[in-house]
Amino acid sequence: MNVFLERAYELEQDLIADRRWLHQHPELGHQLDKTADYVKGRLREMGYEPTDIGDHGVTALVGKPAGRCILLRADMDALPLCEDTSEPFRIDGERMHACGHDLHTAMLLGVARLLKQREEELQGQVKLVFQPAEETLTGAQNLIDAGVLENPHVDAALALHVDVASRYRPGTLTMHRPGVASASCDRYVIRIKGKGGHGATPHESIDPINVGAHIHLALQEIVSREVPAKDSVVLTQGIFRSGDAPNVIPEQAEIEGTLRCYDNQIRRQVLERMKQMVEMIGSAFRAEVRLDVTGGCAPVYNDPELFDQVAGWLRELDGPDWMDVDGELSPASEDFSNFLDRVPGVFFFVTAGDSAEGYQYSMHHPKVVFDERALPRGAAGLAWLAWRWLGGDREV
Image 1: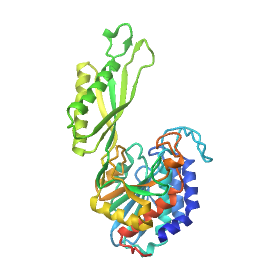
Image 2: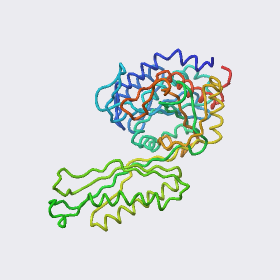
Image 3: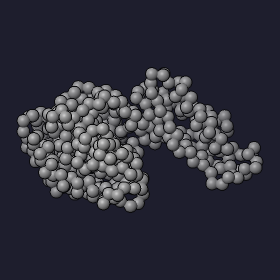
Image 4: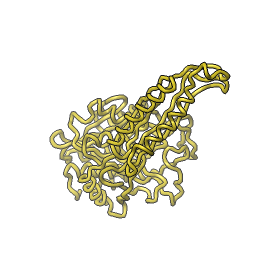
């Protein structure tokens, strides 16, 4: 058995303990006081000197200052959901790790231990990055703005994500495709200010709900009439918020939604047209309207050369039966893409729930349950890739 995989299985109970602690202490966005403190405490126990970066991000270095540097990232934030599972460590309240970030963080802590044990043999440095606010699509950019890609300069980046309700057996490492592998995502808010009044006298008011309805319909025309048919664009309005009473025309309305594309040029074009359209509709209906993009990320782009290398190294880890390239183009989004916009890298997956074994709920669902057998294999996979990228011998 590969030495990294063998050692990861020896650490399995530690990985599970870390994951369950994190699961029972979910925090949102950039407000990760307990999570960041826990991560720093565990790193210090291993002999690291962790550093705060950005809004509740944490970094740590392992290896030799001379040579190249590879970044490994785990996201730490939860979702505003009420957990509805029968897990013995389930959490009550309005926050839940429903996207598996508790597993990601636990796995990167496992990577930290695996690499620390072989630090003297590393031919370069590994920058471990524990990131906030992936779910709001603001965390990666926050850390980039804070300088995470420098001191030392990062030459490549890797991250993984759990896959649940999957067709693969637990612990299988999978990759989508080289090049563009998943969609961009921009979250936005359209704020509409009208003039409130009595429901019986609408002519004395400026109805923001009416303005919002026209905006909602008009925005879909961008997708159907301004985007080439060969280019896929998904524009979803998920929130339309306005009013308190049935006989009152409210003063304001808000629409929140997401834009997803596979092409950055199309993405920029659609965002610009959205801004123009909502402002013109507002002007036509005498309302003040503003579109604000509140968070966003580019499409995930897997560097083709590194993709092929990673695929080969993952096959080395435990043979081809435990690794697959599925060729999929995913409509999901991931703000790790903001790192991949700046340095070559690859985003891959580890199965944490086989649908044939009853793992039927997808991520972001209050009933989602993850298979913890993914933990050692995910940790070993990330550590092995860093080792091989830095020139480590295949036979260790």
